[in-house]
Image 1 (cartoon, one colour):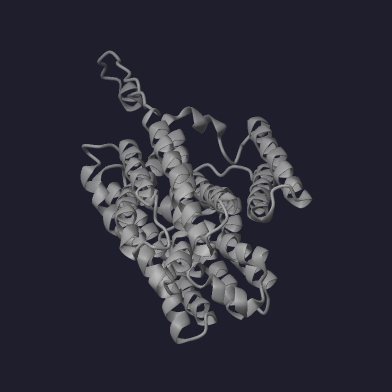
Image 2 (cartoon, rainbow, N blue to C red):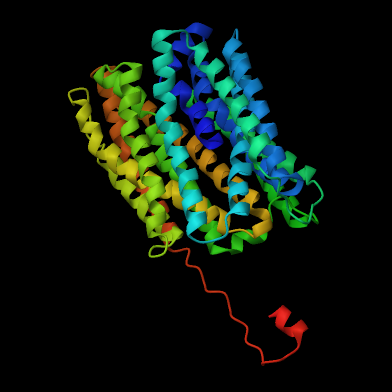
Length: 458
């Protein structure tokens, strides 16, 4: 339920961004930050949240995340200006990071590998699709009957209820070995990702602007510094040895491909539908639900195939289906009916559901049992960093689309180009996941012995 709430909140402005922009007097850059600012907090804080959850208590971080989400959402509800709203969304992202990392970490701790864990992570993955489906419709409906600020008031109340529910029902769990806090790793990774997403967001209005170049160069240097720190610190926040595990690499690549190839393009579907077809915010949110709603339905079903098709292969197949669905969106223009979107969105939705469920299971099993929250955090950070890259890529493609024929025609042409690029990126991601072949663990054999100590070691 926390994951569902996080994704509802994440996608709430997608259908109402024009209304919020007008109410707060935002310019083009402000509109971009209204949509993208929550990704800054998410991507920057996920690894930190995962580390804190494993070392200091997953329930504790879950509850703190719920409280912080409620407070930040109240700030968004009463925000008098764009900077205050954006600041609230960034803090929402940090709170959401705490909830996502700790929630999947809690599932990984409670459910042992096997059918029950597959069922649990499948439901967790379904909540990702469910939240994406509900968020735009929820905000559009409330915006239609009342003020847009009411949306954030309701979300704040729901965050409080989830937090209280967690306090009453969850059991605490943490790693037996608490590591020292990697402050250098936290600072280099957090600042590096923040500047990278800030550069990608600001770059949509011009990639050669001095501050954009400074942001991106500083981000690269800080992220390189993070790698250096993690190689030399005694107890790193992210053990770089995990990148020798094919399953961990597959989970990271699969999440990046999902963010860049799928979420990046789908974020623009409501805007494209409004611009090309004249749909209302509520109508465009309903159209997007063909993708996100089917993702919600498909995710829990993926567990039925886990014994026959492993989670890594499910990710690869799901990404291929998503890519085919995106390629099916090529050619939609201002003369098309809204039905023209449906086949591609249906395919992408079914594929996304399988990917969301399988990635959750893959993220949990790709790391040692005592670091499940870190595995969740790395996977989700890759997804939201990928979505920022994907949104920036689609925005750049739309800006470079041939001019002439009116805004609706330009949007249709740009979306067709974007669908080609997104579809190809998604299928390439599927191929990379498929080639991350896992080698079976070597099985040790020993001589038979009556020694209890030897038997215990075996």
